[in-house]
Every structure is written in C-alpha cells, then in structure tokens.
Image 1 (cartoon, rainbow, N blue to C red):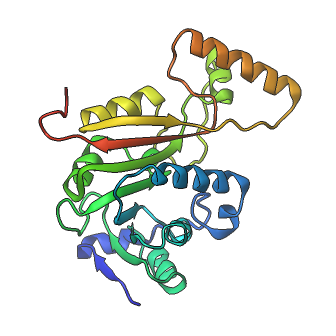
Image 2: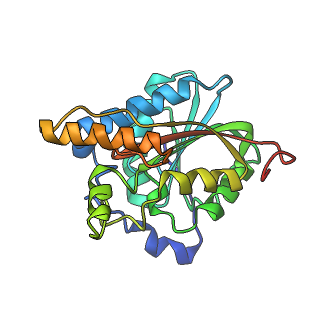
Length: 249
C-alpha cells in the first residue's frame, strides 16, 4: 500500500526509538491472555457507539491491535497512527484495508472533526501531559465522538498493598512515564471536555486462594468508602466529547 510520513526532518531521527520489547505491541506478547482481554474489552466498548464510521487507533505500534479491530468492524474506515517509522512499515506490509501513517500524536494529520471513535490503548501511561494530547484529539474527533482509553491502574492490588506498607509502588513497564489513578484520568477527561460514561475493569479470577480472598475484602472496603481505586491491572474508559458550551462545567 505504502504510507505517508508526517514528521519534520528533526523528528525523523528520534522516530525510530521503537522498542521491540514493548509488551503492548509485538505479536508474541499480543497473543497473551492479558492482551486478548484488552482487545475484548475494547471491542465491547466500541459496540456501544451509536454512529461509527471513522475509527483511529492512536499509537497503534505494529498494528496487531488495529487489524483485530478492523476484522471485528469490517464496515468501519480504520486508521492507525504511530510515531515509529519501522512500526508503521511493519503494519502497512502485514495488514490491509487500514490507512497507516507516521505522525506525532500531538499533531495528527487529519481534518477537523473527522473521527467517530479514537482508541488509545495503553498510551496514556506514556504521556506526561494528557491535557495537551486531549487538545490535539479534540480537533479531529467529532462532537459526541467516543474516546476509548485503556491504561494501567496506578493503585492496582499489588501497588495498593505496597503503598499501605509504606513501600514504593511499581510500574507495569519501565517504558511508562507514569501511571495515573482512576480519579486523575476522570478529572483529566472532564477538564479536557469529555463526559465519562463508563469506567470498566473485568475481574480476573486467578492466583492463590489467599490472594483472591484478600482482594475481594479490599474491593468491598473500597466500595464502602467510595474510593475510585480499582484493583485490576488495567482500566478501560469510555468517554464522549461534549459540546463546547457543556465542557468544563
């Protein structure tokens, strides 16, 4: 097919810092149960969209996830954007009927209000300034367009235990800039002009019995005190862009 590169000359040298050990993109890791759950949850949230024609996978990596989305929603116009030339070269070679481009997510090369749905799968934890990214997204997403985000829960079960013991929490990957709490992301989306419709994290029933029992007890306590913390590793958010008059209220 061939693909376009929308980068300034000074950006091209840094655009191939693509890490093939990134757990969210390479095919070997994508076949894991973790990523299958990630895919299934994203698909379920997309299905709830009432009008969907143009869909963008922002930060698509090698395109494995994008291809699965296209196969599930074959009538959608599916697009993939990533900063890495080598990743998009792989995606464009291996996956058809998807429009892949190399570009900076902060300067996406699309028309205003073009997309019905924009997916950010495990991108948020790589972003030091989410509000700046939301500003770029706001230009290209339609009014009432759907934003689907998946990202690690900062205070998932193991980190909540560590924090309660006064220990330093850990990130899921050394490539993460940070990991946000559920409350932080909801506030970021609200301030960015979005209404959060669903915060979702399917429970994974695995591990030793003592682990599962303790996790259940902590979950009940969190609900009782109305805490926004979620104990599962990954949290999914579905939000819709509000009209300008309703944003920031």
